[in-house]
Image 1: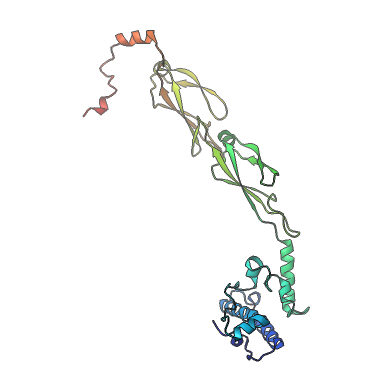
Image 2: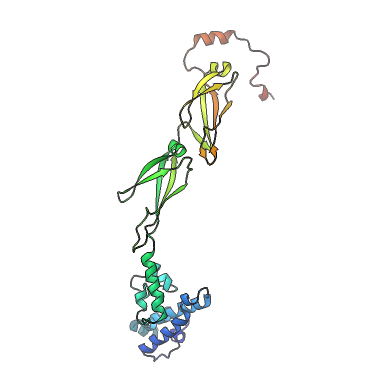
Length: 301
């Protein structure tokens, strides 16, 4: 770390006025706003600010001259340059806001214009965005809905869920975030969607999958049955000779998407009666399947 006296180009016997004049002269040359993209000027302005911070403070200057502190000026590091002080500096630092430069920025000084613009931009700055998470039912995510979100402060937001929204998708509500500290617009509310799983339906891409129990008779003989879909039940014909694992595709009964809609895939599952069925038992006890009927044929070694 360079000696602050060397950075400012003043003698160790320099008066406070000499130090202030030297700082003003160099700051006007090295200020980042006057040297956009110049990393060398930015680094020198950082050193200049640190040097001035030590020598313009009588207490710090005395400690430095006596060797109590080093050229960094303090154990707690300072921010790099003036823009950073606005967001990360200690509340009492001289360069946290434009007023800290009032000692060397006259009305006709270029700094006066720089900080006037900064103050105007600060007043016009929009408020921060607010982040929320909203859990929605599976069918609401598929078909669309409007749901109310309760905020931490007790307020509410009505959120429109577009049809076909996906897990983790973020909805942006313009102007529903944190109000601006000045006269700017409020920030946005960013609502992340979490979808509650359904006990019957499963989503795979834009398709809906469902496992549907059928009776032995419905599978073997075929017939018409009701099948649930996100939009309500529909009547579907089960082909004769269907089996567990057979899949029926219902066109256009899946997830809405741009230019169309996905399908619903119905996987059949043959379910035998859970209680006694004497007639079925009697029939099966006398039934002699044909030679072609060998369900474990593929498992033979």
